[in-house]
Image 1: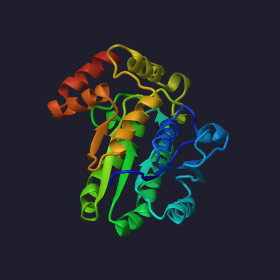
Image 2: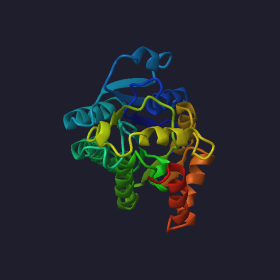
Image 3: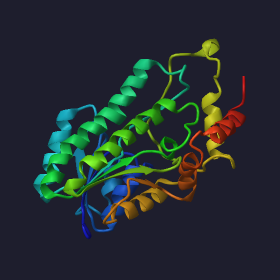
Image 4: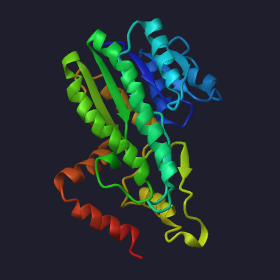
Length: 280
């Protein structure tokens, strides 16, 4: 499909976030953009100058009823839904031993099961119109070796990518595309929760999270991007007539993702990580 699209983007509350930047980028490009938020604190900034192309909906990925009402509202106003961008979610930070299992379970409920429920909600409309595009904001770490301290967060994204790979084949007869969009580290205000299972003297690696952030920002790390840079790359993917199953947000993200393809054993990746984060 070429031309103007009706787009639904989740997770657009933060002015520093990917969803916020993408919503404004697509609206400026002439698309009809429906955004979901959990906070109204920055609505004036989000809508500024784009009130005729940006439309606000309240949605929580843990509230299934809000999903149905949002999708119905989009279809009622535009008559179709061309693109769903699954951006909402939060990061869970901490080592595997540091994070409580109940915290990990809730992270999956939001990032994986909540997103999956919304995908299921939009698919009937996309099948009826025999076209559509589902885009999951993932991470390049889901394509390569996962660094320490973010394993649970990346696990939610990897699970969503795996299911979406199957979905891409299942919905192909109706002209529906699925893309796992993999940015590298983005300096945003992504909502984060910290592992709380181990504190104080019980924690064998209390500096692990600091080591992670230092590596991301170092010359050896994957580098960072702004939310606007990611939004610009995402717009290019969304406007393709035949979008790919996986796409990255720039050269650094593509290079990181390609490493796993070059070495299926991931031995070199593991060795580099061990060297970076040290042995105890």
